[in-house]
Figure 1: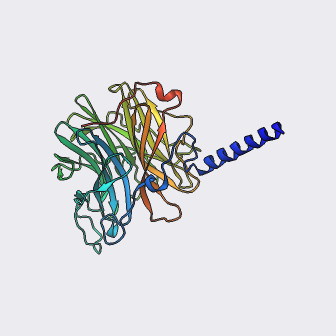
Figure 2: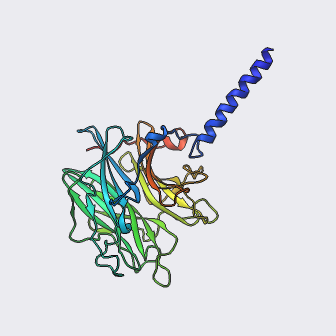
Figure 3: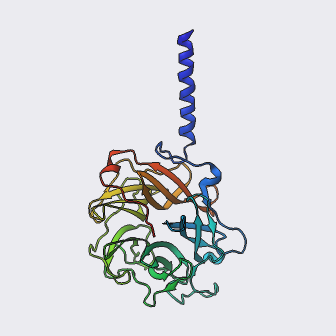
Length: 359
């Protein structure tokens, strides 16, 4: 009888574990999930609103003086024209969108005109914000409205994170017409400042023979002393897709954690398969230029939905991850979500952990 009870107890535990594994939306036991209500932290705002269709590409800072998390993100509304929104949160999970949103907009356009009036009149695609001294500094990717729809990177400054002034010399990072891999577009910047040097990782897209954007991408690296004038010391991608892999078509959307003042780096990024599935993985580097992918990639995946635009910070050996999810059941639904993940494998402890960027 006692043996039978033991067997039944083991079976019950196995069933419970099986349910937990099935319920895990990422397919990775390391991730913990908040309840559904708080897990989807930001959704489109239906109606004739600037963010009625999509919310994507979060960039998060923590203001220790105010005790608030601050998020800048991209929203898409009428005519797919995108702006940059701003939201605040006491815990990184529950967010309040500022009534000032969008805090940055492109030029208004007439959708009947098939021509671009500026480099950013097709709307914004990604954003990266840091707090440096008394200023918030933003690098954003924007797209021209008409073909060939090139994406380039601009720069703006703000004293409060809400009212922004664009740099008169925009765009500050443009496609490399003389190069070979980012000849069409540059997008999805991620910027950090170490000492007096600004470092940017970004997504580059080559051009097809007809001048249109190719369906592949890679991740590049650039440096600057002022955040406005950038140079590409590598001339080649620092991370590329690999044949017959989970990221066989493109890698994009880098998010960087810098350890011990630049003695080591960790990159989270999205990879896309030939079937169009987008998942998240990570890579490691000693100098931010030569990267080795995690053997366990992809780390964030799902049988149905796609994930991209990760933004990751690490606090006390705990990852805090904001990301964009594309709902496969509704092709038009893009939302921003949040999860945490303990640093529990040996590769995570090879560098002294840094903390979330503070004011």
